[in-house]
Length: 216
View 1 (cartoon, one colour):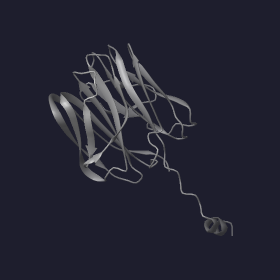
View 2: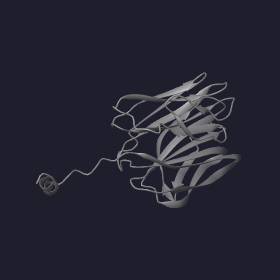
View 3: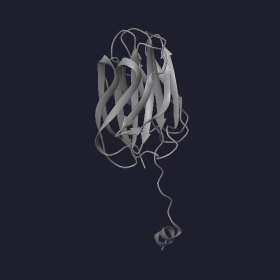
View 4: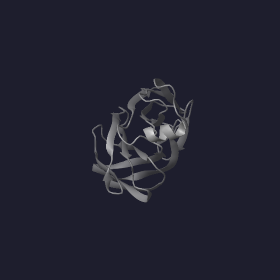
């Protein structure tokens, strides 16, 4: 089964608080949800929980950018509830927060994410990743120190762009498995980003009876 983009939601919560809530609507089958986060003011991990429809997301990867105490996170949830639900991010200390959600259909329902990686660069950034499964999609976020939301570069479709961080995906399956990348463009300043790969759902194997009747 091929992966397809479902929906994206975003908000930059500029007023520091210990809880931030964002509504998002999911649909379709074999669902997968990724939540990118940016917190500001500390180099330590201050995300206590990220929950969608009161179900905990799992941390995939995070990084201290080393820039103005900004930290990036990627969380995920396999089989998120359908319909309109809230994602609630709870922090251990008050901070502004950039919250992005992207959901997909046709995704493998175990063993996600396929792979993860992060990167930094003084200007534009190309986030490289080595996929394990064939026909993965890539999803990433990126921010920079001076020019606001970043623009999509080679291999990137931007899905969100509020606040100081952009997020997006490859908008296509990556084949064969191996080295792939997404590029983000900025006007000035250092760039940092996270990238994950999402494995596709595999079609159910045909039964012996089905194979018999197909050949007769």
